[in-house]
View (spheres, rainbow, N blue to C red):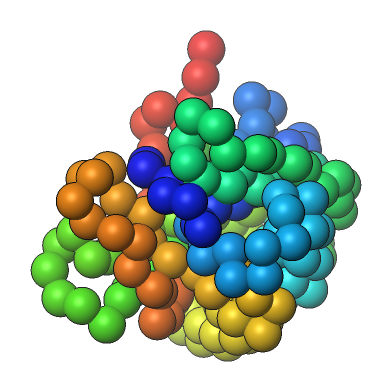
Length: 190
């Protein structure tokens, strides 16, 4: 992804018994505060830990959040060490099964939508057909609404970063959990 000046990318790094090779997911953000990458990493980690992490299984630990500011080649980076597990104490699904979090913007078209593959799926919340329990979907919707509001208040509104240099970052208006769990074949490394 292209990270222009004034923007950044937060990378969430997960470890734990349910993730033998680890897992990562990312989110773009606008750096409105201009307080540097360490403050961005700390603030984003705090918000994610408060709002989203409690919904993940306790065999998954958010190890750290890395904030990389733009531009890609020369922008600074820093990390916030978290080392906190999710709060759901139940069996975890296989490492390649994840919650599919959809990122939407106010603009239409495929290039104005994104996704995040969030690890830590609790088996009891996903049926044998891959359908995510309705209460879980609602809980994630509330959690991500709070997360986005918190990021905005801290001066780091979430954005969708693009690979096309002609397309600037687009503010994310909502994030929600898909009603079906997702799988990633590449997540099962050898």
